[in-house]
Amino acid sequence: MGTGKIYAQLRVLKSQNKSGFAVLADPDKIAPAEMQYLARLCNDAKVDYLFMGGSLLMAHQMELCIQRFKTESDIPVVLFPGSPAQVTPYADALLYLSLLSSRNADLLIGQHVASAPIVKASGLEVISTGYILIDGGVQTTVSYMSNSMPIPADKPEIALCTAWAGELQGKHIIYMDAGSGARRPISTDMISRVSSHLDIPLIIGGGITSPEKVYDNCKAGANLIVVGNAIERDPLLIKDMAQATREARRLVER
Ligand code: 1GP
Image 1 (cartoon, rainbow, N blue to C red):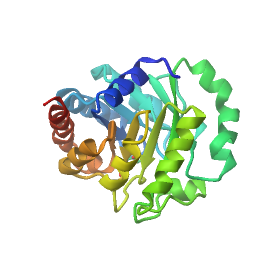
Image 2: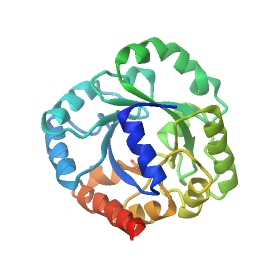
Image 3: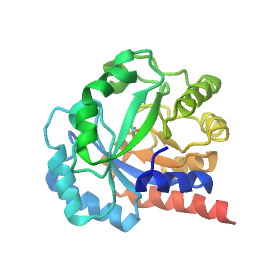
């Protein structure tokens, strides 16, 4: 079981049936000079985490982006890496992803073996993550790059069994993702089916574009909502989306 601070926070959210909110920044789509503005928006909205990473990075500016963000914010930076090359000690934590929806041995264990020395030496909080791709109605970069098929959106039982397998293997969290820019986000039906039968925290992302959808996902049992694309298009959504998670938390407290 993980013992780090960020994982402990996620466990608390799970045990209280609550949700947090994370902004995903893709270092290919944001300039280092824009990170301070993003940090101020995240501070004002009391965002829980900044996720950093991308399925395929062309520009080598992730470390600079993180450094710039950290000049303005104490919000923890969590790496959500598309490859071992994206592991950097400038962040606070690392989602150590195993792509459970694939049958691609390299993404289940191969890259982990190759990157283990870097990860061990990084000093990062390592959060063992069962990563599950759900069909979002469009082929995503991660699906193409991983050479794997996502789980069909109307098969919650496959998603649940895959999440269970991850839990039984000792993963600390499950991340169900419809993929960046998904046309259809994961249904609340699938989220509640998986969340209600899982003892470890559940992260949900992919194709979430409105505060209403954030709120509905929280109510369905997501413990952390991750939004990237919609915020790239309209950074002012951060405030309303973070507010939506707080409103859902208040619902639980009532
Ligand atoms: C993708 O879950 C993240 O891996 C976020 O997706 O960019 O569509 O919000 P979006």
